[in-house]
Image (cartoon, rainbow, N blue to C red; front, top):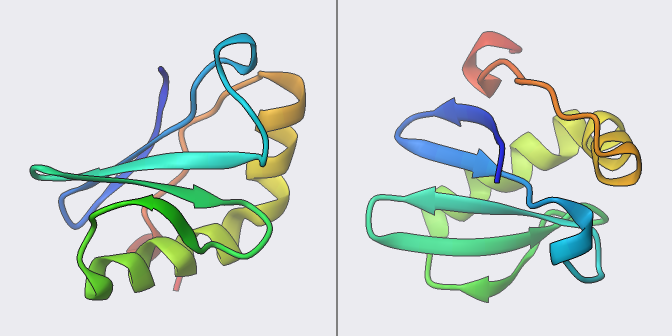
Length: 87
């Protein structure tokens, strides 16, 4: 599972499509917490990541939505800069 970003102790990953399922989403790891977030609205649909961290991940998804959707579709993964570098 390629790592596509790291920021504030959060690791963002995307599985290879043949091992995944819809809806298009990313995986986030924060310490012992994990979650899956949709690309359409950045909401966590599975997992136990704390609310304040969920907000940062949602902001990441909104900022990079187009690039994340392209990665999901093409399986051409790239490392994205942390959101703190994009503000």
